[in-house]
Image (cartoon, rainbow, N blue to C red):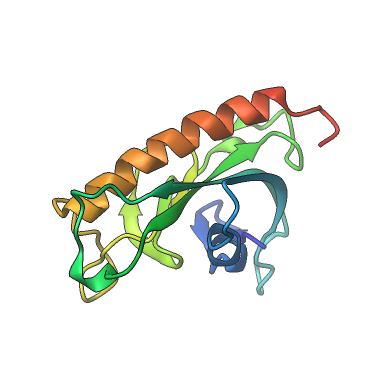
Length: 163
């Protein structure tokens, strides 16, 4: 389950997304499914629910992309989680805001500045806080995420309203 916690002060933090890593590791060409996020309900915080569409896209590794730490890898799955209006107060559009957090199976300190969540097997710094942005592996994954977003968004538009 993808978790998003909203504190009583209104600040949104992301918590460990147990579904991001398990869904993104599937071997299917693509998956599109609804996720219901549960919010942290620690002391002094208000419970809130948010829904996402999760889309994972697997892409074959190009021959010109080499990464020693990923030796033997022939394909990788990239995923996007698109926030949905359902599950939030429709009068409060600020509740639809998404942090744009970037995950490498676990959250990083990177924010994409796009209104949805991204997940891919990025090569990270040793602290796991940042992505080594100039590595060919990460550039390939960045481009694959663009493909995943477009395909996921188009699939979401075609999805029946009750899905």
